[in-house]
Length: 479
Image 1 (cartoon, rainbow, N blue to C red):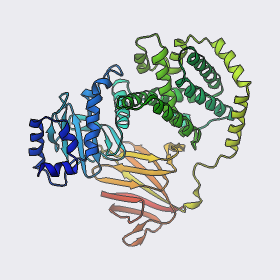
Image 2: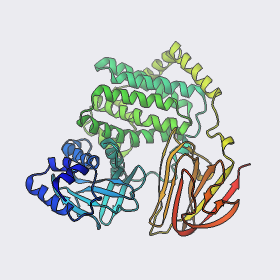
Image 3: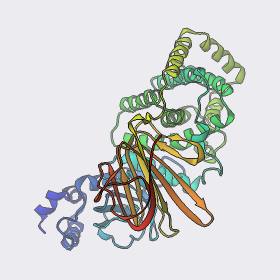
Image 4: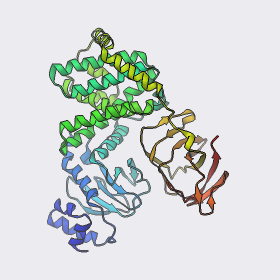
């Protein structure tokens, strides 16, 4: 293969970063690959951008060293490019060792687990990798990898703690009004400095303290947990974007858009989840400015005190002062207007899913072997809802995927409910699709009733399924 051919398919960006000897190695190795098996320019650039700012990222959080971690980018069922500090997994061909001891390895047969928008802490032989789909940003890769770091260093989520279930209900318009004003104050704080910023943050803490007295303790616990987990990952990805040249104005605009998006969310879970990215990262940025404690990041990692408590301490905010500030704001016109808007919004609330367009429910039960786990990923508009009996509802599905070595399901444009079930030593994934008509098969429409399916049974838009093993399915009319 010629140098010209390599540049045509995307190796030009790789060539720019390598010296002549390493580039010669790449040419030799690439010459052993099929012509079509080459990473794209965007795949290469993403990982080189990571190398370029790796030293800066290493300084962001105690114990988090991106320069020593393993990353990847993939095109599903096509290829994968990894940047690994450890010996590469089987099936990957080494391309070059350009910087920091990292090795770039490539395969035109990506592992089955590389599916959906991203994978976190995917185990490939002895290598643990966080990877994203080609076309993703470096901010997304770093955000998800920081979640991988959290799982390794901060410990698992507490047992029997289900934040989405705890956030299932916002009981009053008053809480929505508080949230709207809090959003505005946090956004305002980004645009201020010194004592003006401190006064704005005290007003925010005052409203937050007042709101938490109105909501249940599990709601508060879930909110604080989401802000700690998602807020810290968002703060890290914002630093990565800044290192690549994002301006402070662009960062503030993105946070403001996040707050506005949360206010348009369809469900309480979606509202609080979307909001946590912006509120949590803002609280961390304000702690960076105001906390006198050198180990404040370690205290966030430990989980106590919470971000709000740490900021209140940093600002020397006493409960009596916060109470006075809250009373003054609640009596004001701005809060009364927000309260009226919240009442109108609640009165106009529609069901999370209009079922009139869907007349059929296709339910599938897939067994999960111990040595072949089912990876579930999804991308949705407007969030998701936790329902009774551990079901999760995805009403506006851009993409829903289930992938293992023997089973692959890809859904788009159809509402999905799913849950994982354990019965003794057996594990099952149950998936229910809502359809306007029975799915098409090679023999026509699937008939109502129970079925045992295998192979690629459906020929339906927005529904792709292949399975080497048989699985149970049932098609039922929706009453």
